[in-house]
Image (tube, rainbow, N blue to C red; front, top):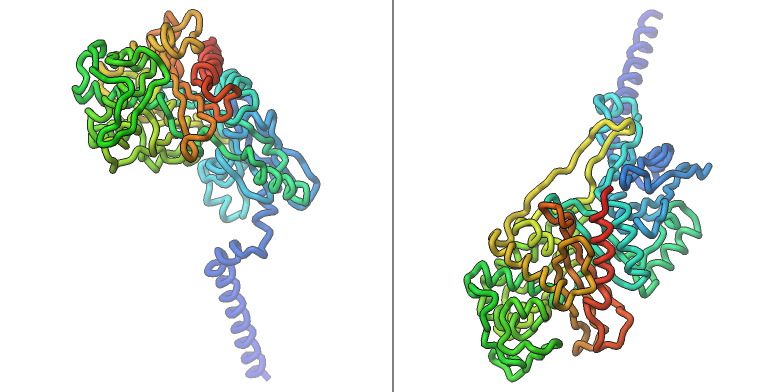
Amino acid sequence: MIRYIRWCAYFCALLLAALLVNVARVQVWEAAALDANPANKRGTIARYAERRGDILVDGRPVTGSRDSRQLLRYERTYREGPLYAPVTGYSSQTFGTSFVERAEDAVLSGTDPGLTVFPFWHDLARDRPSAGRAETTIRAAVQRAAYTGLAGKRGAVAAVEPATGRILALVSSPSYDPGVLSGTGAAVKEAWARLNADPARPMLNRALRETYPPGSTFKIVTAAAALDAGVVTDVDAPTRTPDPYVLPGTSTRLPNASTGCEDASMAEAVQWSCNTVMAKIGVQVGLRRMVEAAERFGFNEDGLRVPSWVSTSHFDTDMSRDQLALSAIGQFNTTATPLQMAMVAAAVANGGEVMSPYLVERTTQADGGPVRRAGRTPLGRAMNPATALRLQQLMVKVVEDGTGRNAAVPGAVVGGKTGTAQHGVGNTGTPYAWFIAWARAADAPLPAVAVAVVVEDASAVRGDISGNGAAAPVARAVLRAALEPR
């Protein structure tokens, strides 16, 4: 009898060992696969069981959470959603996340290890700390000035602080309310389909993701390349440029929109936006040096993040001389994001140094304890300090007595550059109106803001569309708001 009891005990011990092995297999070896299984909804339920952390502008939340009383309990809400959509992006239970909501998702959802001093304990307990917050660099007044200035027209605005790279405004128009995508159900899917089918593409972040021919605003890059290379040593000297200018190796004549460009100096060419002079100077600089200059400003850089990824601004590395002439005035295949052109203006304002732009100042725990903090990060030097100083003077002349008078701000020093970019098959599309600028308060030692504005659908007769008429007033509003004391 004792022998049978002993064998029964051995068998029970074997069953217990098998059970423990199976538990270890499920809990250790297969845990990751089970967590990732689409049929496992526990992770999703846990993700939305707590309120999501907020995104802040000027220290105030522009996001919130709503108790839906559904299985996925808390849905994201947005205060003034269309105003801040290019910054926040969306957080949707159906379609995922975008922009800051995506880039800082770990902090906002409470899964970042930096949110607690004991991350291993939370892993063991299958728990998570309270969600953190993301404090942006956006200034509410500057953002609103840009949004109001575009007034629903298709276009974008990017404004940065030249000395640090902080993004002060990031606007894309037309915009949308990300709150309509927050939850689940038919209404959310219908909103997604409607927004994606809209020909105005409201969900496209034009400030970061769309590239445009920069037109004459690119002449600042060409001027910097010419001064640094020594091709132009006296900006006031005549350039012996005919009007029109015949593109090298072709019979194609390049005209000017302005008068008085024949034999104009480079200073006059920037002031009055002479295509002929700047195209000729670009050819004299040469392909290699033009490419190097453009890349020092950030063109052809495909790794820029703010922390969301930014589309690559492009300057061709293999061109004929006639193509180079057109590229030097921001046409042919040259394309740029509004953020890139704001970086060009900021480099001039910052003595030639390009700073890495960034949108999130810091992330914190729910109680304000620090998780991560952004810092001033130089990307490199776009031009010599003396070149930057000379370009500052030329850009000031554009606003004081040139093509950019509509950007003038009383009581401030403003430098700018207009642009009108042709595009479409045979240049038949409505020209894009551009303006880039920087501004310094009269009593301040350094410029406080640099901005780029592009308007896709300027309301004017095609021949009358200009950066000064359509884009400069928007830039002026942004500059004025940025110069106001906080």
